[in-house]
Image 1 (cartoon, rainbow, N blue to C red):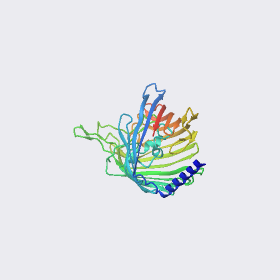
Image 2 (image 1 turned 90 degrees about the horizontal axis):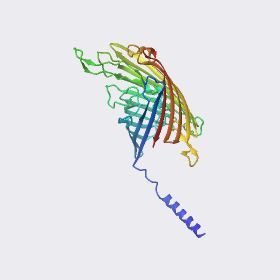
Image 3 (image 1 turned 60 degrees about the vertical axis):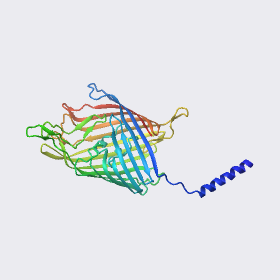
Image 4 (image 1 turned 90 degrees about the vertical axis):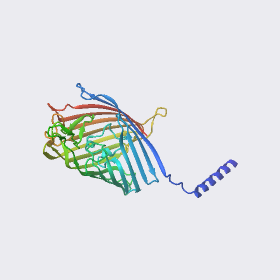
Length: 415
């Protein structure tokens, strides 16, 4: 009885002291180191000519540092050491006085492609889909954005240097013009966590700008004095082999296709996540002016994809799969299994050929279907097995480039 009285007295005293003590102040600086490692296997089926290389590779090895200052300013520096190179992916500061207004300056993802904006640590497939090829990876500039009505509306408006499709560098603008990019997303059931369609989001993004390449310079005797700068992209297959590129040759004047004027992008997009089910869909269109040898035109390329996944033993979210329990043999728990399938296409404007691209080397169309199985040991540990089959129109001297079958494996860890 005496022990019970002593314990009760101590509990009352502790409660009184807690009520009299003011709330702990917010730490002025909170620093979070993060890391991500993707070790891949990339193999090709039926490639007797060995035109594509079977290989293991260090696809990504990233270290980043996130810091929050006075719960008002966020800082991020993210560097990738994979594939035998060092590349700064992100380096920005974001001031967030309120949820509906955030100012971000530095180098960050352009507010365009849906799957591009999804963290690479949580994407469902080993490689992103074809629509991602038509938007820049990162760019340098300033962006305002935020969440309205508790995240029912999310917006972003950015002024950027203007980067090439799929590019992360350069960090310095190559011309005076700037790109303006905007994104508006609606999540009508975001405010109700118990709503069946809580994980529904849809909207659109777009950009407008002016890109200018530079033709090669030659002396009157024909000697090359400065190489051309195309300011144009090339596009890869799902197996990461180059499938399309514009004509490029500095041997003679005006032989390289270069960007020469306005460029616009439009990207309607959306996703739905309910329980273990996930569906992601996006369409991206790019219109840009090009010139070569005195011929100038405006070309339109587009790509789209639909991808669906289902998670057994976990929750499926746009932000990543959350296993209900980690893989633990002693405890008899096995993490979560995610299965998925997708279909995507890339179309190159038919007016591109033959003036601006060589039809015997560059494809006019890619169609690809993929399937993936992912074993999530933990939220930050997963094993992936991904199969992709791609068909091509054009891209070979004899007509159509041979279909590509690729197998990917990935061991992914992050913290």
